[in-house]
Length: 258
Ligand SMILES: Cc1cc2nc3c(=O)[nH]c(=O)nc-3n(C[C@H](O)[C@H](O)[C@H](O)COP(=O)(O)OP(=O)(O)OC[C@H]3O[C@@H](n4cnc5c(N)ncnc54)[C@H](O)[C@@H]3O)c2cc1C
Image: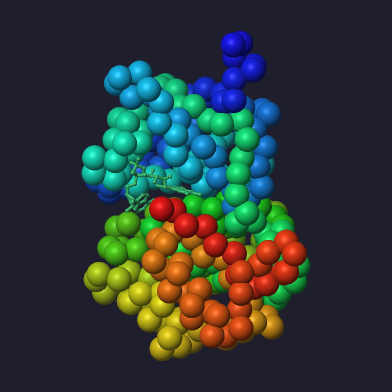
């Protein structure tokens, strides 16, 4: 099979940055034909020592307009994929499926005033892509990014988040963003402490955001830990907020990472 007929392209690693022993960011070249919507994921492939290939889903952190692809990865101890991925160095290649996938995209919502982006760990990735794309800033009056980690050192992309306000194309909208970090296992200045579900139940999250989460005005995206997503969806159901489907628009969109 010729390279152009393969289902994937080979991209070169441009940068790898460890954040903690179990978290790192990576940047690769991008095939000119690889198109995606902010919030979608790529399928990445690595070759194992025995010559077989392992594929896993990875949300893009980078925006659809960037010339490179950026990803944010966990290292699962003994994990089939991440054991290989975390060994790669600048100049090595990574396979990227030609197609992008996923429905954690703004077109899930036909209306809404406030957009809540609720993430745990690497689940912040698609929201960073969405925030670097222009559409969200035009579509919503308020955007509340909630990013929950266990320890403060796991908070990635703080410079990117802080820097959004300085981007020319966002300057007039930057006041719309509210960033609420959550650190669950230690006190941290400026961060809430406690699980997302607890902070929703006791009202702390909405107090911090200065706005209520309601079916009328709020649209909610959830990404990361499947337990957080299930528990939060149950809390939202009690507020008459449901998954948004093509045949029945709703208030909630989710992406489970495992
Ligand atoms: C749509 C989608 C998008 C994804 N995007 C990302 C991403 O942007 N970044 C990323 O790091 N992973 C992402 N994942 C998870 C990723 O596909 C792999 O599961 C991860 O790379 C681990 O692969 P593995 O083979 O090493 O371990 P696996 O055998 O796949 O996973 C083993 C266990 O590790 C835990 N685990 C897996 N992924 C994570 C994670 N991200 N954070 C915490 N614990 C985890 C779970 O308990 C899982 O059962 C995504 C998954 C899906 C379905």
